[in-house]
Amino acid sequence: QGITIGNETPQKPLIMARILSMLFCHLALFARVGNSFPLRKSVSALVLNATLEEGRPDSATYFEVTRPDLRRCVAPMCGGFYIRRVNWPKTRCPNGRNAKDCYVSDLDVAEIGSSGSEKFQHFISQFTNGTALVRGDFAPVSENFTGIYKLVATEAWISPLGLKSTKGDIWRFTDTGIRCIAAPCFSLHAVLLNGRKVKAFSGVDLQVTNASADMDVRAHQQLSDHNLIVTGRKTRVKVNGVRAHVFRATNFYTRVLTDSCTVDSDCDETAWCRTVLGGVESACTRFAQLGESCEGATLPWFFERCAPGLTCGRNADFPGANGECIEKEPTPKGANQEPAPRPVSQEPKPEPVSTKALSTLSRLAARMFGRTEQ
Image (cartoon, rainbow, N blue to C red; front, top):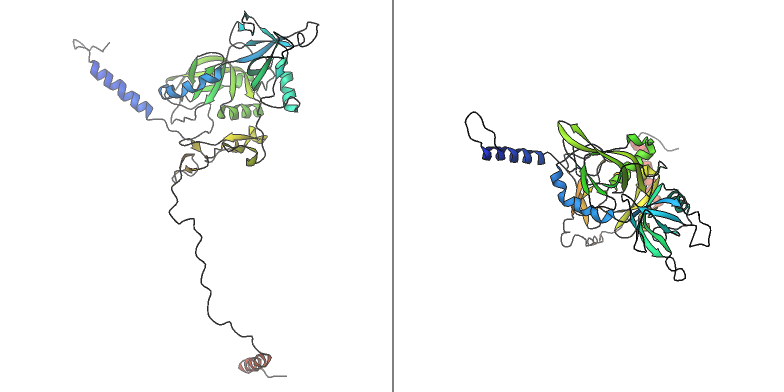
């Protein structure tokens, strides 16, 4: 309804004009500066509508272990563990029934790494203890054991804190790269695991988890790389008089890297080898595409390199700011041709000076400087 002053009638067009002007002013306050990580910076949630839809395919088929199988019988029929879909009270098992949890005989990590490596041996141990998550699906063990299934992993996530999933919902967070002049900035995109809920947050608070400085850096880096799963609750706070949504974490999971590298040639044509995790490791990182943020004065694990065929367009007035990947200007015709060789000089080469001429020159020099020959 409009506002009535005295006996005047509501002035709805004026009110709508004011609302629209405030909306446009708000949208004008944001600027995209790159992928440097802020947990508290800001933008209108309206800008994220298109981006939010992108995360939904990443929300399904995440599992955690509930208990080991202590039955005593021949493997693989016994000796495995029970798993459940996170954020759900029931899990649909391979036999088609809904149950509190489902039995699997083994965890197959062949698609994402070697089960014999130290990294994945540690992960499998943590997963069976209930302190890790797996994205994957059920698959038959073999034709010889009908009705017995294993869990085939396509993603591996581990809790650096060594905690089991605590109270609260489990979300996958992505830093959209949107940056704002004034807080709050709804630059974090979150998808509920195994669900269809999608929300925009202005920040993630990891202080409740008592994470160490190294763990904090690791979490921030993986959030920048679109790889952070967080357990907790949404809270509302006021920032600059505006209501903001902050996620209070009680636990978090970082993705186990499977694409380690040492040089660019270790990666395929779509990626390059970048230092990650605070300089501890290097991993193949996707090239920044057309219109995405690139370069800038930032930490090595936040640095973005443009894909081949693109160049990083930067503002000369702000040398430390991030740029944007743009198409390279076409090379002028003939610019790549080698210059024609210079013509060989036809002037005669000087002849060597004789010993007699050198002796004459020496006597002349001695007379000029008032010296006498001995």
